[in-house]
Image (tube, rainbow, N blue to C red; front, top):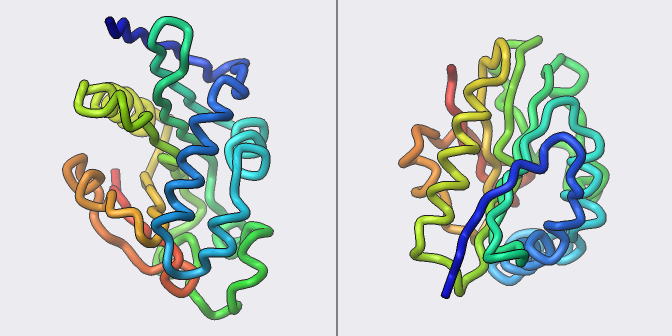
Length: 189
């Protein structure tokens, strides 16, 4: 019998609780990816979730458990976007041409507080049980609660057909990132 509970691990984690879930998400994205597949294949817990969690000024990590087994999570973060950070590129983007689009739309007015839905994942055998909805609802509540938030973003890897899910929560397609590697969706608050 499934017994789902939820824990907020935002303050101190341990983020390692989500290692296997994050690696499963990264594998799913790599398996579905078409553009820059080699970049997607290089992503894992150690170079995505762990440094994002540890480096976030404001963060939200909410994990679903079946007894003591993590079965799903959402990770969100927030910070002020400046002209400098607006143009910054993550290290993994070095393989992508400079003029291939940025994480943020060119018309984004900065400085501005932006929150990001960074990761959302539920193990396949636990889907269709409203776990994803619970995670998403709590995540959206946090994303909107960030003081002075102006924009909420989610970046969807190519091949991952999650755009319609995010549109149900009010996100609208914003722009193509890194030559089609990622689709950016936005909510203006």
